[in-house]
Length: 122
Image 1 (cartoon, rainbow, N blue to C red):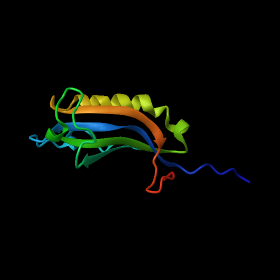
Image 2 (tube, helix red, strand yellow):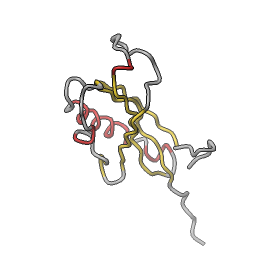
Image 3 (cartoon, rainbow, N blue to C red):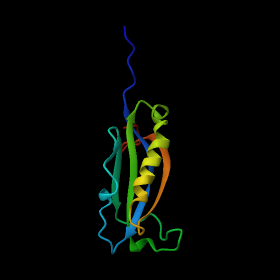
Image 4 (cartoon, rainbow, N blue to C red):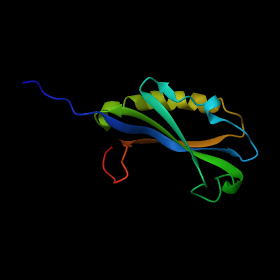
């Protein structure tokens, strides 16, 4: 009898925000690919409004387009994908550094399973 392996599930590696002035016609996909590697995906979701009123530098959030950025991969559990974190953070930072000076971002480690609509692991 063979042992079965746990099923893989989506696990977040990094999550945060990317923003730029509403006067800009910037396409983030020009700088941020859909994948950092075959199994490491970059999700970009435009938010209707920022979840805060001002940025740390005092810029009103209402003057900016804001996007939530999530880097996700598949794995058995958080421990199985944790070794990818330093690499994914480095590659993503290189991509973000290539954006125009008007683009701001805040990205943090977010090593946890993706939750479905009902709060259970997806």
